Figure (cartoon, helix red, strand yellow):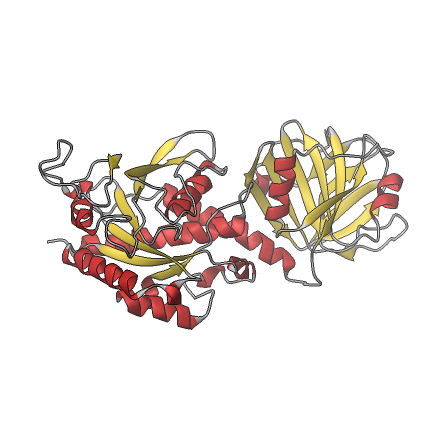
Amino acid sequence: MAVVTRLTWSEEKSLEKMLGNVSLRLLYKSSVHDSDIYSMNEKCTHQGPTVTIIYVGSSVLGVFMLRDHPEVNDNLKRANPSFYFLFQKHNVTAMKTAVLETETKINSGRLVCYSSGQEVFSVHPGESSFSMDDSLRNALGIHFRSGSKYLECEVFHVEGIGDDINYISKITGATKHRKSLLVELRNYKPCVDFVSEIRILLLGPIGSGKSSFINSVKSVFQGRLTRQATVGSDVTSITEQYRIYPIKDGTYGEYLYLPFKLCDSMGLHEKEGVGLCVDDIPYILKGCVPDRYQLNPSRPITPNHPNFIASPSLKDRIHCVAYVLDINSINDLSSKMVAKLQQIQKEVLSCDTACILLLTKATNCGEFLQDKYPNMDKPMTSQSKLMDASRMLNIPIYNTFVVENYTSEWELDPVKDTRILFVLRQMLRITEDFFEDLP
């Protein structure tokens, strides 16, 4: 009978994402194999990078080791770059991590990890117990006592890692940067008292990824993939209503609405009478169009409509427009579509509305696993495409961003999350500049 992990399928896939899109193969399971260091050693040595996991109540505590599992008869401490992590069952995205320069050794029937000569973590398979020092316990927010018992110990081989001594810093960098962006956005407040929430309108051709970006943002804050905004690849727009989507923060189980909203509309089409009617855009920008208004490509809203908002306040209007373009199709846009986008941009500028350019469907966001988190404003793709898009709409290159939405995935990816959060933060910062220019 096959030996299976205690991790759920979802938890295992999320952990693989957290470790840099690797694959995990179970080597040792204490409840199936003998619960002693010799059985663990037999299954796990000479396997390369490993993850050792212990289950303590509803918590999952683990250590990733880049080098081979130590051997029983080796009396020397061997350098083994490691990082430690803790998450609660069914909530891998809230993982806490700690990175230490570690040496490992088998000592008195235990797997022991040392840092600066001091024992920081150990697992005793024969007694189903573990211990850790106060510094590591505090870093992970653990309140277990030394010598605490665990329910199960599992060791996995980590497949898909190259010979890279900087691998630890790369995979933990995604998680750290993601956390700092989440904290900043959760604590965000508009800089002016008369606007309680920022409204960001997404505009772009049909199928460019507007609704997918909204779903991606909502997914990151809810800690799971969600598909509230309808997406598709039809030649006609899937979105038929003007929608204002609040962003709900539910990562830690307490659902709170954040002070920014994303507004979705019909996609643009080069033909008249198809897609979003350009005459609707000024009213949308000014806040005259209500949520869930049924858009009509051939008949724009008028002040005579019963749901028309005749006297919108500053808080009702659009504060930032994000043009959304498929990065792979920029040079394929027809002259009519380019002319329509430029016409819309003139209207946006006349309304003194902040604007940015968002290029979607990038497939190389994984470059940000390569220690580039401090430089996320730098292009991830050919400079020529960015310059072409920037010139087309007369939007500065520093207000042009690349993002990879969630489309067909089942689980969140910390690298994608980080890029999505970074772009959202930049949208809010650009909007703050708009508020500075208000009379």
